[in-house]
Image: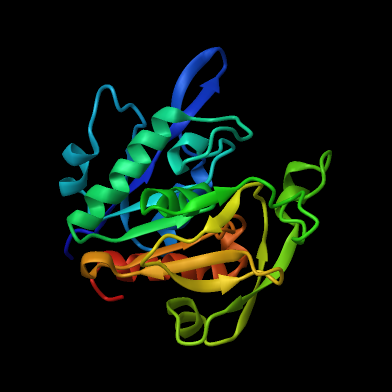
Length: 245
C-alpha cells in the first residue's frame, strides 16, 4: 500500500490554561483524515519563525479551517472591523494560499479559511453577515449553547455545473451557518459554487495553475459522522490531493 497524501492544516493562536498555544480544533483534523483518507501535519501560524515557502513543497494540499478570530480589515483594504484578530494566522494563511497555488497544489477552506482565500486572491469581506437587514441571519443569536450555535441552518443553492453540484447530484443543500464575516467582493478568478437565499456567496471554486481550489462558508467538519453531505466535501478533498478531482 502506498503512502497517503499529506494534508497541511493551519493552526491559530489560542490560550490553553495560561499559556499561548498553536491549536486547531480536532474536529477539522479528524474529519479530514477520516473522510479524505489522508495523513495530516499542522502548520503553526508563527511567521517570525517559519515561512510558507518552506512548508508548501512538503505538502500535497492545504486546509484552512474556521476559528473564532476574523481576518484583519487592513488585509482587504479597510480601516476598521470587529475582532478578535489573529495577525500571525493572517500572514501565514495568506502566504500559504499563494505558495500552494504557485506549486499547483490543492487549496481547501472552511469558514475563516473561505474568507482568507478570497482575501489572498484580492477579494474583500463584510462584517455584517448576522446583523444586516438586507441579509438573513448567518449566526445564531447570542446566548445559545455551543451545540445550538452549530444547529443554526439555512439552505444554499448550488450552481449548476459546479464542482459541488456535480459531487452532490442535487440543486441545493441545507447547511449550518456560524459566521459574522462574509464575502463582499468575490476575488477575480473564483467561480460561485453556492449562494444563500439572500445572495451571499457561500462557496466558490477555481483551478488556479491547474489544481483544484474549493472553499465553503459553512462547517462540514461539525457532526460529519452523521452527515453524508459533509462527508462528501472531505471526499472531494481526498480526491483533490490524489489528483482525481
